[in-house]
Image 1 (tube, one colour):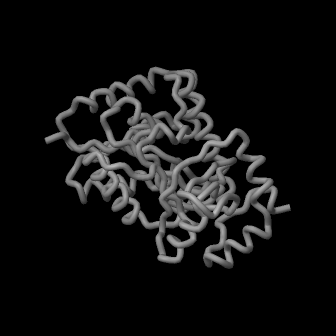
Image 2 (cartoon, helix red, strand yellow):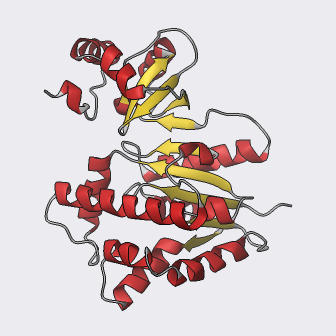
Length: 278
């Protein structure tokens, strides 16, 4: 029987370690975290995790040490859940998952965790640090490996953890792993209803376009509204790349359409883009 190998990448504060440990218990697998390794290195060097990431931009020997450990997992005879930004790349046989979260939700989680190496006084300060660290990591991995860790099409399954419990996230990941192992097709993305903004067609299958961290419905609004009415906590969607998603959003997503969508579905948007907050 093939070993279970699930890799978890994702936004800082998306709940990777919590969900990874739940999966460890539910699936009877071993949990392997490069984040824990990096935090231990940072503490040993008297740095914050952001400072270590910036340091690693010019000191690739630390990345290489961590990467060698990941590479070894590709051929390991073990059942694993791997919490790592790069496991999808170094362990290509793994079922690759990306966990995303609204920036302010993620920042609030980090702030609430109270980690000594990630001490912030406000959610805004935590959000700024998260954005800086993510940018630093993306630049480093692009330079070292020529890969874009923020391209969500790299992953087998993308789940929005903003407004669902870790238990639900773990349940959905396990369910999609089983579908993947059976060769069954499924929608790549599942997004919380409060993060989907109206902009497109009622007809068709649910699809969205992303711009600046916001998700705009391109098609399937009718089906999405029905799913929300059934109480679905996550909406299965595909990504519809547009030549200019920002222009599409400004043209089709208005204060009036957002208000009408909220009235229709009973779901208020988690956040609004800047062009609707003026």
